[in-house]
Amino acid sequence: MNLIPINTIFKNTTSSYKYYWWLSIIEISFLEDKENISYNEIIFKIISKIWYPVNYFKLSFGKKDRCAFFIKEIQREYNLEDNLSERDLYQFLIENKDSKFLTKITSELTRYVPFRFIRAWYAEQTRGLKDGIINSKIVELQDNKAPYTINIELKEIKINKDWTFWIRTNYNLIKSYTYFELIKYLESENPQTSNLSKKIDKPTLRKLSTPTTYWKKYIAENPNKLDIFENKPLISMKEVSIDHFLPWSFFTHDLIWNLHPVSKNINSSKNNYLPKEKYLKPFCFLQYDFCEFLLNEKANKVLENYYLLFKCSNDELKNISKEEFSKKINNYYLPQYEIAKNMGFNCNWFLK
Image (cartoon, rainbow, N blue to C red):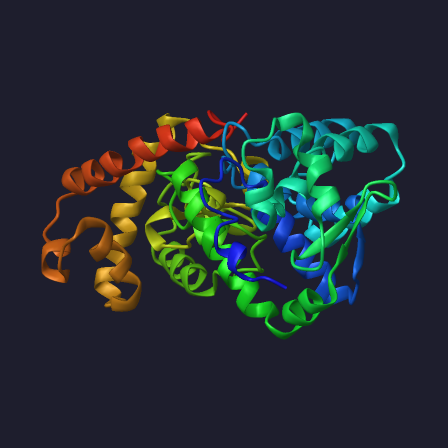
């Protein structure tokens, strides 16, 4: 067993594949207590892990990354939803593993990575070799120093015993280190994306109890204020939902300045879309009135969201005019619109 090359695996990486290959191997080894792991299991685990970041958060995994491309192909072929859980998707793929469509994808994705991942352990012996013979040379050289050996006929890997013990003893540490390196890679591919570490996995259920409480009180005290989509009195909404003006999947936060009340059916319709920019002005005005309400309520904890956004104090926030407030919100949101569009978020949603 030789641990030294593990530090070089993720150097100069041009796709996310190595990170997810390793994460999937250690997870299957640790959680399922397996040493022999099929290519299918690893590839389907990888696809299941990348599915949500690609489809829901619209992350870029690099121009050379084929896995994100195949995820879109799988989604179209089977008409699968964006927000499938990792477990449900993995189970679906395992159940359909013998289909020609998935067999072609797994063959494509395992052409190089099983071999190239362990190449660092045989760097001297494979240096300068032509690309076409590197895989066979690695199979010829493979031993128990690397994390696993490859069985080409069975299309599986076998984790070497010392590595199995090391993985099971240090699983959380290895996993954290790999995710740390993965996030560094994704930051280079998504330089304008905020809260990247929160976009690696499907989020847990979030509660909007505090914003909901304040908005309901605001509606009770200001029943004739108009909602931004229907232009109707807020009090007329039968079922109130708290909507993220720009999708939560873009910002990945529940800060009060991106929230507003809508009827439940509109919230479902808008879903993960960017609203048309014509809604930004009424949103700014409603936010101003709501901020005034929070100032009167002395809701200092919630008001911190505005202090940070505007880089101002409580007294300065009190003295901001409606026009200035709207201008600040508008100037913040317009560049965010462009970033979200460029990431691939569906845009120009409007109420029909």
